Length: 340
Image 1 (cartoon, rainbow, N blue to C red):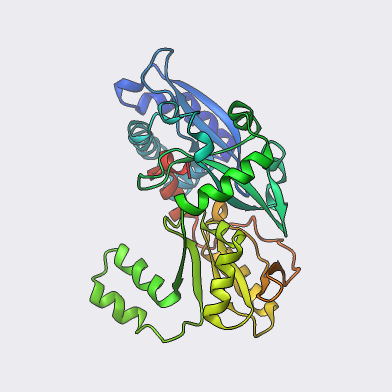
Image 2: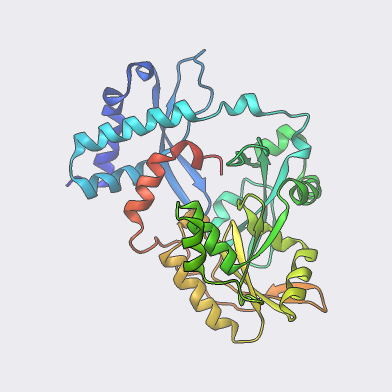
């Protein structure tokens, strides 16, 4: 079984032999990119000058290598990877055609990432710190489309837009509020929706989720698209509404960069922190992890602060048992992941 470095060389040298004829003139490029919570090596297929394709999705070498380790069949893996590459490129939108600089100021939205886990990425991005997190910005290219294509706003993009961090923050606070309105749902309702979205009949999903209680113990805070919805905790009115529903101060449990969970602040927050850490390690993909900390919202002071101070020592680990699923998902949706 060949190691990662040798496998990478073989892929770069041979993958074009497995691509459809329409991609024979594409150039293979190896790049190292900063993603949320991680640095990754990726392969890009770059078209010849004048080609119709203007952007290239990222195909992660580590995920390819995992598929090879699991199958042991190099030829079959290269064939599979080439097929997924071709499919992803055909389905990837031409981002340059979506860039409308005149409307950009109306399409900047908020995002949250963990500060400690993303220091390298944040060096080249306008941001501001918020507890152990950092507020970052994304350019929402097609807010009306399913999937909400967006690109991160780094220093180069901000310079092109002519917007400094203060201007980005001011625009994003208002834009996110109406482009991706906050949504609060009881956990029982969310569980039912998840099962229905995965194909379970509504009656069966309701049976498994159980009847909705008069008052849920846990609530999910996100936005209308469930994408980068953890940023909703930046809106005081959302937390005030949540505290009013629960009738108490609340703890915020960071489920992922896309959503958080709210519970009553009536027990030891470190017990919740242990639960969040376990879920991060076993259920949440690394690029979607937000924090292992618990946050306390004081409804009288109207302030969100950290309730715990535990090390995020495992935040960059890989979910147990998720390697194969993650690798297959990356290869199947390589074009989509680039823009989320």
